[in-house]
Image (cartoon, rainbow, N blue to C red; front, side, top):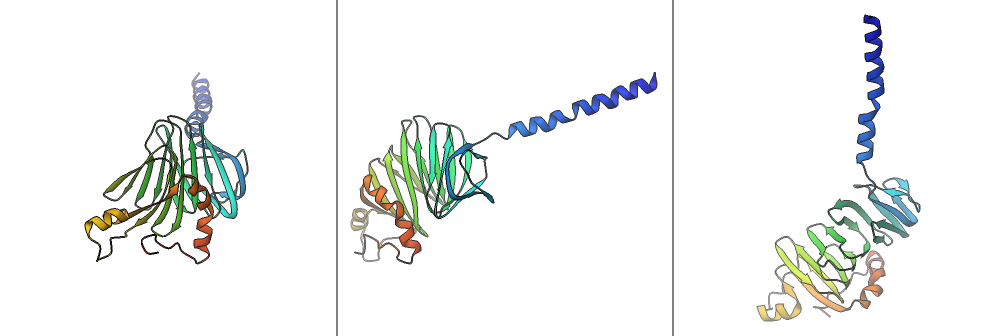
Length: 226
């Protein structure tokens, strides 16, 4: 009788043992799926269409590479020479962009956050949104609010970027000493951030490859100093 009870206890323990591991595995849900991948990696693995992407994984592309990730009804695209890490947020996606350029195309109700150092972008509308972010050089960003406005913040400074425009943003760029407050305002300089409107959203499409020019040793010239 005692032997039978011991046998049943041991058998029951083996039967129940796998379940905690199954629950832990199921908790790690897929963040998105690659729709395109060329000369690209997910962490250290070679990327290919259909590969699942999980939170915290790093996506990287070579100079001629590209990655497309479907996240819900939204699509995030990484151009060449781009490195980014993806995280889930309520109703959308958070992207830590380290280098390069990314493009977000989201359906109504989907949120996108893009983080570059201390700079922070977030879609500001519940409607469909399209936004392109390019890191042109250290502390130089180009942002296109192609569809839907954007909330931009840098440290303690905040600014709303209306849709339909492309902005060149210089971080840690105080006004020239000879500038008074009126001239600085006309130039788009607020605190330590300088904003310049480069044109309509169509200008952002042409700027998609500007980061390659910067990487080649020809940094952009500030519109404040033609």
